[in-house]
Image 1 (cartoon, rainbow, N blue to C red):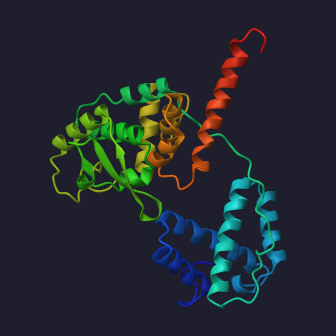
Image 2 (cartoon, rainbow, N blue to C red; image 1 turned 45 degrees about the horizontal axis):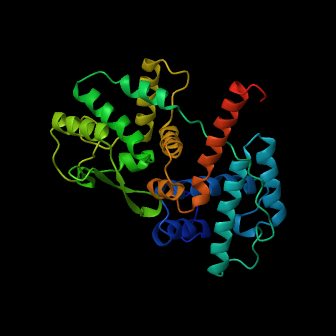
Image 3 (cartoon, rainbow, N blue to C red; image 1 turned 60 degrees about the vertical axis):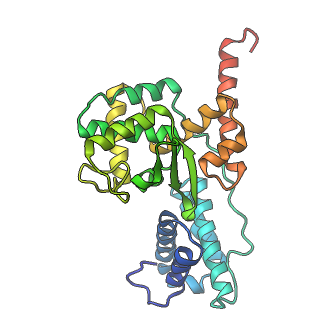
Length: 297
């Protein structure tokens, strides 16, 4: 339900505070939980029922309505996961006698292979940043860093100058749940960062590593717009998102012979099962090559 209409001690606000302060979930995850609870609360409002008074049939009808609206199976699964977490929290806090999601199975999630730019497409994208102005040097450093580290966009926009250990070629990233990991930064990205920092004149340890020209952190939307701008300059048919560059980073490492456990650590995945998605990308590409070039495919 909307935060502004909920009482200060409502179960949903207690849950969101727990998710942020005790469970240590990322700001993006907490924001997604808030939106999901608001959406479900609006659905229940039409039935004159509250979040803490709903039944299993309400949850099922809600999922059916999402499917009728054409929502992806992954969306259904995420919404149900949010409701399960919420109602488990309510049970633990003794605010709920019966969990309406207890007997529900997760909707089948179809595995969709991510869009992975080829190495040639990434090279064209990076080469499209030809401007040596302060903005151009910043943009080159940003794009080089996204591909060099496979970091999430929030990890890059949240990085500070103190996080770069240039003499060691390493960068400290803060990922989901505030977890830290250290990743290597290749020579082209290090050189782009050095040129950017020299041009912008920022030295304060807390300053953004790749921020605005005024020294403020970049927003996610700004990064997306920059990628679209340079993809158009590069003549790419599809502008990669920051997460597409993360997919490219992982896939290209595996194609080069990297161990999947090492890639898991570099990406900051809690489970290797998440990283194994990229082996499916490899297999998909191999099948395409086989069918195209083998005489008896």
